[in-house]
Image (cartoon, rainbow, N blue to C red; front, side, top):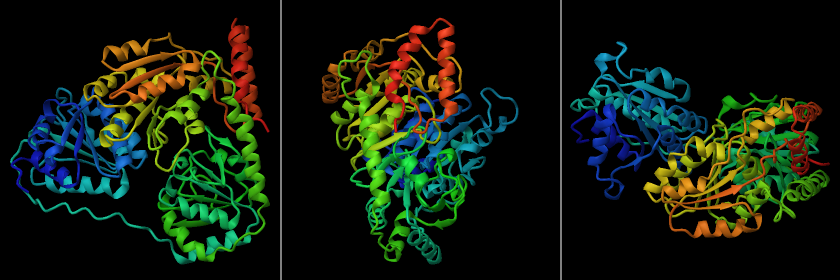
Length: 584
């Protein structure tokens, strides 16, 4: 390496690791690193581009999406104190998603650490919970070894690495060991043969097998389908697993969980063996407690932590299924599979499908109908980023995977305001792909400044705004808890005017019959566009299994609304949500 400074060493290692972008905001203690980035000449010359966002939280979210979509190291950076503190929420999202992200947290002068100096924080303590590597560099001799370790930890699939680098240390002359980085190729974890045989024995012995597929089935779509065909098993999936298993799947019975739909939940509980493939599904209340369960996962630490597991298998899903295939006997009795496929089809047509029929004249716009139109208009290889809350519900239920589409959301961290900054990282890392930010008005308003980032770089992100002027998911939470909704509604905002002021094509839609035309027009724009869909604020999601306690809570809340003088709202809410109550 030829760098003359510690900051230069860091940047050279990033170039060697294949990094082409750093998301962040320049300033004070970070300036030595930023100047070294400038010296690389940008990605067009084999160097690194500096992507200027408006808030460091957006930088971390953008890096998270970049890393998840490319599978490569992505980098974000923040200056000392408040600058790098702003990174933390996006880093939690990246870390919980297992995204290979490196955060550069610049720091106050090293000789002032511990003195209560201006903007002093302790990043090496603060970021400990959202990283697996988190170290403070205090000498030039130490620096190159720390840089290599941070990059290797992130690219090894461990999640986020954080390097805290005081500005004065970054400016020091480069010394120490500067050996090449030489990153290894990712491994394949092959399961123990005895474990595979135990899994095969359990499958062969069972009469009714159900498969529950998660994110870990990525790259194993055909093998999962082949297993289901061999043993007559319906396939349910988690939200993170949806994009990798739902498409071209004749055995699909939907999704379970808080956002679920279809027959997945009931089918899993009716099995006598549940095979969990690559999922650390967090909601144990949706998993059957009295069904024999096998779990296959690349991370042995997650096996059995959500539900009792009788057959644990540590290994890649793909490697496991390839080893399992010759040991599994075909089940000729298809009655279990056919029963749950039939029930799933009935539920999808009577419930999920019913939400979108005859909705082209209903005002306010039914969000389910709008989502179904978006599914038809969007490209087959579109990248969707989705805000947490009701937008996640509509995406999960109405935006269909194709095997080419990608879906990025804060599925494990559950942060608001992720969709637009995620879309920034998605579009910059995939300039030739259609990127759609499915935003809620709550999320968009929280990170509204990133409209300026999209406008400045002329990113062709298409922002589809589901605007119900309320925090819909929170409203639903209050209602099922028997509480009248409070503090969730906000005054209407003309987001099209805000977007237009930033130079972004925008259109407001209140008539459902014009949704398709508005979306097609926006998608044809050579640059960013925003479509504001004014949707029904009373359309709330109800979980796929509605307990008596939840129904009582909903009814109690409605009675409180009526007693408080809101009878009109209560009637409107009841009408809006009749379509959202799952039917047998």
